[in-house]
Length: 194
Image (cartoon, rainbow, N blue to C red):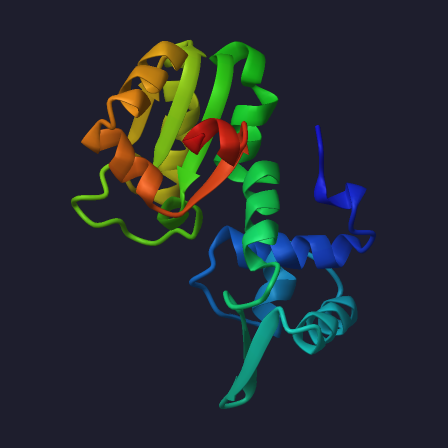
């Protein structure tokens, strides 16, 4: 399976990126990061400095601690978020269990789901899955993620034929899903909206 280590050589930097991008709303102080990723404090400080100098992280002193958080206006933020979504959590589970889950054409996470932000009532779907799906296998993966997050995940499964039919008919439910921000886990944008 593809991994961030294929393109990023620093193990500590990968762990820091995964930590910050797995919950983009969270702020961390240095010792908290060290505890989370289980790496040496000097290596963590060095990588935080590099990421802050590069513009990916911001920092702010509060009392005797310095807090870091990810900048969502960083030019490659969406790309990094997409990569981390595919290599950690539910995205990695779906990709690694792809054959058990069925013949998947498209898997899309909503932007709010990926960023762990609460969705509005009218935003009904966190995940769209298109293909020939073995529902019990997919449901087991989603239940495991729900227990980690402590909240329900709304997902929709469609066959490729149903997806294409709804897209041609300009189905309001599907158009509502496609109108929001998203991260492609399997498939690509062109297949989704083209």
